[in-house]
Length: 466
Ligand SMILES: [Zn+2]
Image 1 (cartoon, rainbow, N blue to C red):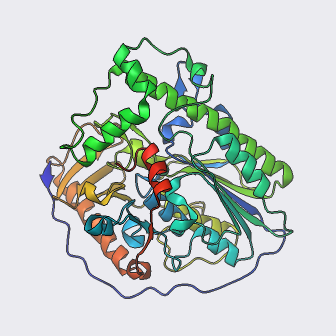
Image 2: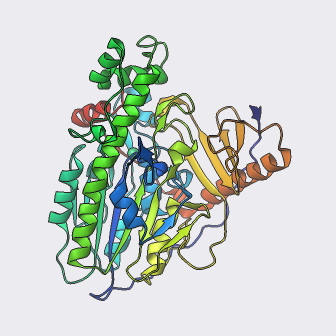
Image 3: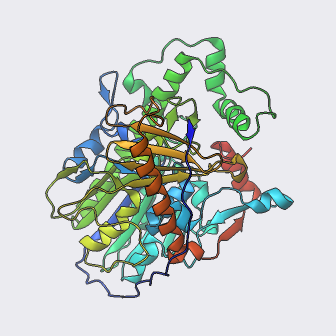
């Protein structure tokens, strides 16, 4: 690794926020946005032991516009979801951490929240006459943290099963004569990986495990807590547990069991929604992926490699022909694309663009993470342009460069060998940072909300708080 200097930043003129408003006719298409937490892009068409991981959804994708190179704007839930909902990069919206600086100062647990002034996707559609409903399962995205903004109904089902999410989504489906916006967020593939009975076995039986491997899996929450605690503070809690290759394989088999289970429930939702009204736009994506030691870590949020920021994305428009688009796109593009296809006005502050328009031109794709906790002392930013991708640290200035066309596993750092490319990508990162800081929402006062004991326990159970 070598150092790179990111250029100076400046504040440019404020961009005016669009304030056009128009109401929809009762015949405008409905919008269904489905997010699966922690779903790697490669699982949509993956096969394990000869068995497909998402056979039903991959068939639906054949009728949609599939974006094969979609990049999430962060590698963990909160900043990524705010980017999807607001069409703003993480640096712009600033909703970054599970615990805020306040926690470090006086131990009061405050977390970053979505500011009420920062118009989210639901609020945008509600402002244009849509009835809105959401079903949420991730404790980071509760109403108390601002995520119910714009929803007529916002159901929070604590880390609930996909079956419950689908059932609830169909219950809250607005019945008004006008169009609706429905958002369903599934969390099953998120750790701990515990698919319903039989789903992991679809891929064949578990391999032979040692006694210690079996014990680690049987008490996975404790095992993962020790791994996560070591990341937060290596001096606490002793060394992380050793996870054998056989145990790693079994973990991924269980993860795929969760994926296979959620596949059926999502398609049950899609089929039910289309049966009621085929005039519905369907968006399917994920907030981030999951890493299984490809680059030395398990989980998500701490790196920006492809296994974390490459997410599945397809959009099914009622009247459009199926298409496959390999040009890299970003999840901040979803809201501008929906607006454009539905004939609604774009907001001037949106940083995404309409990616379903003919003649899509490639442009750099960005992602960033500070980890889920501020005390990780992590500040990573990545840019992909063409076949190259660079990841830089804002803490020590170190950068890595990969050719992801020839090295999709990002195993060979080319930083010292491609000086023209590294300079170009460093310039892109600096340019984008300047654009972020000149966006009107960059200066929106940050919002935070207290974290109650119950939520602390919920987040601890899925590996976020120690
Ligand atoms: Zn997530």
